[in-house]
Image (cartoon, rainbow, N blue to C red; front, side, top):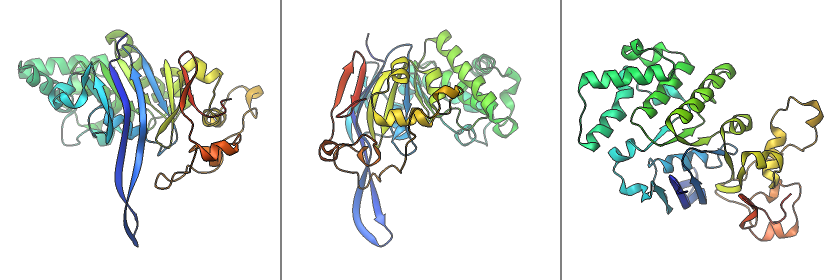
Length: 323
């Protein structure tokens, strides 16, 4: 099966200042040699601590940031060869905070209609105002709102309703891929469930593929077919969701699972939670980047960075001594 989105050895470097009194130039590799593939109809989950590079990777995947190295292939063609108008009808993004991603000066109808207008312009078939409003009303009803909401402004809606509007805006141009960057982390638990179920329903009815980013393993487990775990800009483990949750092979994945709350008292205390802070990307440790926090560290881990190697069919891990 051909991949819809193929991220090949992608890195992204940013120039930064070391400090107020240190003028020497420095750079941070927010994403370091990441390769991922997203297939038709699947959800690829991406999980990791804040600052590990998830959002940077998401922005590169939709063309908001160019990679420093590597390439991103969308529907068999390099992403940067698609014009912005062409990309609008093929890949869209749902951001974490719907209030900041919606223009407060525009009605929700105008915000939702914009991607559709762009994709119609790219196809050379501009739509009439009547057709635009009809299509916007349909997509609002599809995400559980009313067509009559078309003339309201973002501040007139709740957080969950605003995220539904953001989903409607992402869907209206008919993309095949949605990149969801923490789409429910700003919502209450009950509203989270509603939005996640909405995304599931949309995927089933429209045949969508999701690159789904979250720090919440419960959300990742519910949404994902496969899961990639990121640490300090690198993918350290990749497996099916079932395999990853049952047989985590990287100590970092094990620590993330230990930190997740469990409703089963018999499972509590079986895994040690992660301690310490993530190293600074300005000065990453030698060898395995995780070794300063790893409870299973050995001398080789401090000296040599492990390769991303297959552990079993579809299960890859970046560790000298997988669990």
